[in-house]
Image (cartoon, rainbow, N blue to C red):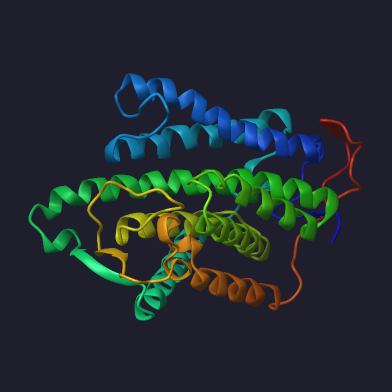
Length: 322
């Protein structure tokens, strides 16, 4: 499937960034967003000098500002340097419908994983959710604010990895190579979330699987909207619905549904220990099954693309869109 445009045909006049340069730039955009956001965050007392957030307001700032800056940089690069509309990175028609559908599917996936781990004896309830205590209305404020924060954060990662990087590599080298590069790189950027442990190793493997599955989801749907919703729902319900770790990070907020913790004697490979359920074998099995289901639905559609341009940072093309 070499030469496939996943989401929309490219315009007649455009620039296409070289694949290796795109990998470097994608990481650079993410890091630059973090760096640019640290100074104001420290000045406002929302973060410390090491970039660690302080309370839920700090988490909200990090999710919206630091990730949002990266999304703006990628979008600007596509619009002004590559001279392409955002539809070519997946923001095409039926956006709200696809986003909400993806959000619902993401919630369902997470509930299924948490439910299986709980039934298998991996969790015990440490406390009730916000409605089981006084001050429920006030407790809903951070949960609602962080819902928005996770929409920005999850969508940013999708813009960088599945929207821009995967689409660009697929247009040159085909969907299979694009999926592999996207998934491995996505896993590696999460490899420093906690100290090196066996749960981190399995967590990174599962995040690679997540990257492959969500890439297949985006390619199958021919849009980025659905996976933005899926990713946002997963992170939000994981951290704020059940009080569990999100890739090793714990949100300092009373959970919406129930506050879960690992049951005494529960094996790390069942609960994911300090990395959270993203490092559970239950997640491994469900992601593998979901990926196989997407693949077996038949061939992937897309838009034909011309032969790859010369391997420079970017080259202007006059080839008519197809």
